[in-house]
Image 1 (cartoon, rainbow, N blue to C red):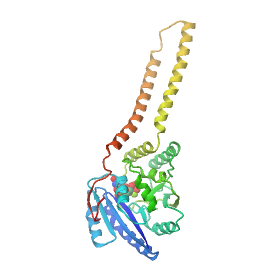
Image 2: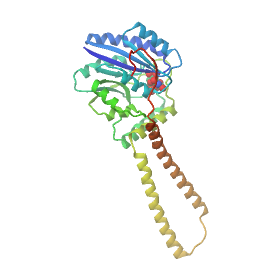
Image 3: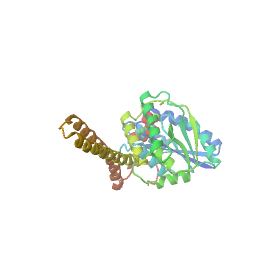
Length: 315
Ligand code: UDP
Ligand code: MG
């Protein structure tokens, strides 16, 4: 009999928890017919509403439900990491609580893992129905850039919703980095992954926790975490401008020798100075991104702090 542990990060989700509980209870029954047991670990990511109270109550009433609560909001990535370190099932699942990840797929995922050919069954949305157009546009652009600049494969439309084997999870946990970009880490560890596709489902209740700006920052984090291409780009850009400068020096020398030295060109000089200063600052900024990430990394601060949990031992 296999044990399936599902990790569910929650941040201010009092509206969706009850519906999720109903759905996952149904899935638990289906799984028991397949000779699998199911347990759920809710990770409360510093919610400020009634989420934690609801989790406490659910954990009291159901032995198969556990929860873990952070001291403040550490972000979904931290919640995922905390979940992974605390669950012990042979198969480990990861999903959102807002029912955008259909729980009904879990039995199918478990059946695939049971055949032992794949170590991970992941999901991707085939469309972005119901999502704002601008958001979809930037999301697509991000995946396109990412595919070009990073060696790790990041699939367009991939969700965090997935079921993983124990060894896959253990491999994920060997990556101890502070700046966690799970979409990249999943690809980095390798193994064979089977992709299931489904149509985009809109959030059941409540609101998305991701503003456009938060998503933009997240995508920059992703690029910095999985590619050094921007810094290399800065170096090439610098080289290009050096070559251009040499060319113009030659032009000016020849022109002065042939036509003498008329003092002119103030506007063009201003343009050149502004352009170069802009490019230099931009490249400094790029370097700064990498440096700041390194700074956070060497401080070795914990990824999350746990305030309260229903699990006996806290790791
Ligand atoms: N979430 C979290 N911490 C955060 C933001 C979100 O744990 O700081 C959880 C949230 O409760 C949900 C999941 O991550 O279960 C996905 O969030 P959301 O539905 O807001 O994102 P979207 O589906 O719009 O990308
Ligand atoms: Mg959602």
